[in-house]
Image 1 (cartoon, helix red, strand yellow):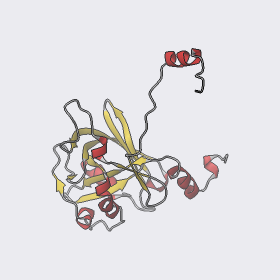
Image 2: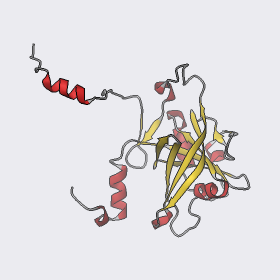
Image 3: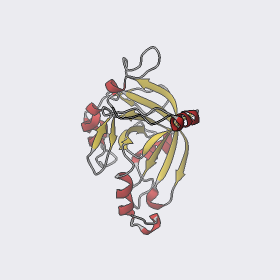
Image 4: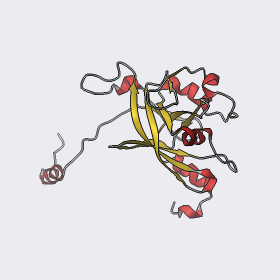
Length: 218
């Protein structure tokens, strides 16, 4: 396949991207408006962007013809903060409920049966069942024009990690963390249990490898 992105219909380009950029981490984002009404929504156009400062990026696509386009984006504009709740395997069924396009007056967390905990630095609450929660303040948002797409860059101002997942040396037990990522289609996901290592190399490693004689088969 050899084609310019501009020559592809929007839906075809979307399918190619979400079927090749794999897996994608999931942010179950909680936010609230000025009145304190809470919204929860999952996003797989999400990732960590930097550690100094600690930044995350959300890609939010709005509803066609509406402005403000999404409850999450409207809430971030109103209060300046949000919480990224990472999703483990046990949280997936409730996360999918939060992804339903409910009317604004419906509380996704109540429909999903999820309890919340107060945050320290932002107004939005955290999801108690999430193993990792990042309290974030909006640093900058970039409107991308079509379909009210917006790139939100948030700075992590407070971190919560479930007790027992981090040892005294700061190492995270990734097996116990059991996070999931988004795959292709509407309902495929992957865990972190199938892993392999490939050590980083230096130029010296490459030169030493090139100079070493090939090993003979026994």
